[in-house]
Length: 341
Ligand code: UDP
Ligand code: MG
Image (cartoon, rainbow, N blue to C red; front, side, top):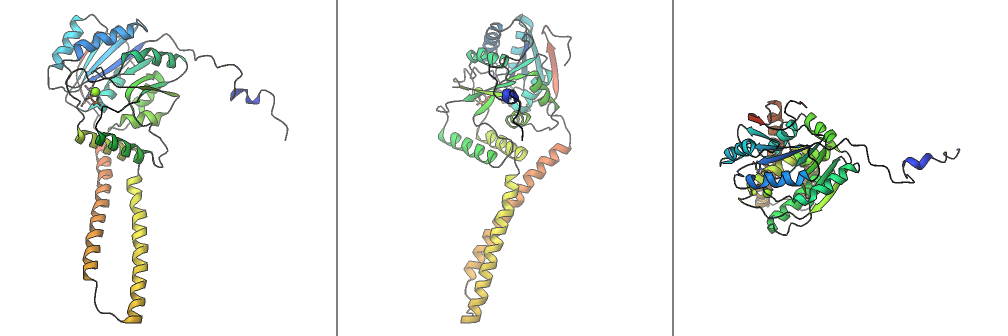
């Protein structure tokens, strides 16, 4: 075969670094999910505006109140009315959870880039400049990766590890471990996320699923400024279950393997008993073995039915087609008020 033309590989190994993608001037939508953040918001929103102001004058901040039970509603309205900042306040009709609050923010964001950031100062504002640079350099999604989980309990760290291990075993879509919701999304990515129809949204999985050119930015989360984390063990557990049932079928398939192994063992054991009875006769032993194995395998069966149930429950939730959140109030003081997305 003829040798490829001289410039054949140029596409794969460009001689000069690629020029940055031509991005339009930055118009940034910042999405801030807030659940019981009455103490943090009045400090965080101006701090965010200040940090974003270093990158562009053209931005909006979307505060998504996820059904807070404290004074977050009044605090946010007060900010919208008196701060003079380009704010938009979206109140969900109840607490739908952080994943839904983020989806609501992404759905309403109008910029050509969308920043997702927590309201509790845990995501360092100093990283915004780097995120911006990476975006300008052609990355469509830049996400913060927690570099140090030192502050978390051993149990939480072990649980997290186990979760990523199961999630990423044999799954086509790999979740980068310890990547959170601190993200900079290009409009392309935001549109792709919006187009995904599922109601129960495990965002970490969806970010990975949509793909695009992504860059990771390690960071050490700061301490929560005020208040307490809303993610206790129970909520983390149900989030993990949501992730597993929406992104891997491994828990379902594992039972076929276990079933096959057990059947094989039973076959061998049955054969052995037959031979033994023929050779040595039978003296009716083995009742404890029988009782124990019945108990063991009914346990195994119940467990596998339970796992089926988890998936069927998820299907049931999806076919109901209820929206993932409802907006109770939308107060818009952003400069882009009359634009639609
Ligand atoms: N949050 C939310 N809805 C919830 C729980 C949390 O919008 O049901 C917001 C919360 O206000 C914060 C962010 O999600 O801005 C992260 O929550 P938190 O700090 O409680 O979680 P952690 O940092 O421990 O993961
Ligand atoms: Mg937090």
